[in-house]
Image (cartoon, rainbow, N blue to C red; front, side, top):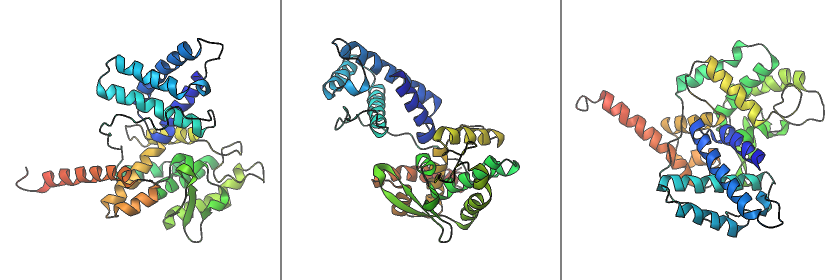
Amino acid sequence: MREDIKSFLDYLTVEKGFSENTKAAYQNDLTQLADFVKENVGKGAITPSWSNFSRQGCLSYLLNLKERNYAPTTAARKVAAVKSFFNFLLAEGKIKNNPTENISSPRVGKPLPDAISINQIRHLLSQPTKRTAPEARRDVAILELLYASGMRVSELVSLNLGDVDTEEGYVRCFGKGNKERMIPIHPQAVQTVKDYITETRPQLLHNDAEQALFLNRRGDRLTRQGLWQKLKDYAKSAGLGKVVTPHTLRHSFATHMLSGGADLRSVQELLGHANISTTQIYTHLTSEHLRRTYNRTHPRAK
């Protein structure tokens, strides 16, 4: 059970871009849940496990949380942690039924996504070009493609050779719910991917039957964790002074597109958001930028 929690926390870092503080809070929340499952599911002959945790057990746990009189934001986070965790287990095939299905979460304000500036993006994307190893040349294509498309890291590492059309400048990916979408990518990103496919990928390839687009040094499909570690290294060498995850590039893509004049519906389609309200959070970022610009430049606002 603890291993599943660790895998989930790794997923939060790589896929969702959660901060260390939020990860630590989720770890405490899920450790509390694991203790509850062991104490309650383990009373009988049944071995405590996530698959043996029923909807009724989940409701009992939520009632237990309510009786502890947590602050509303703490209670909301604990419920969110549990729901996210079981969604993850279901997606990974660890459980067959989600005990949190149709259980609503208390609504609290979402924090704004953490984006980096266009200059910081340029500096970050230039880091792999300073190295000569095949993995670095691969990473040039990866970073360019992430920022050009706004893809989730899970979507990027799942790409196969046939999913990128370097002639027409499109990438095909499968998002949440296995929904397919076609994303246009600009010529510079297309060229870096083309160079990687023709020049670098053959150097990493060990098995001709391998269809994964991005390979690690062993010739296997690159993992989310492997990509996150690489990106963390490049952010450090770029001197950005902050934690940068693959999701930071997704946030930055959306923020910069909207700041540049893209309409919300188009950005929703590009990101693969099922609900436009999810995309709308980025408008707060651009609004904040406008407010700062106004306050800095208007003579009566100083």
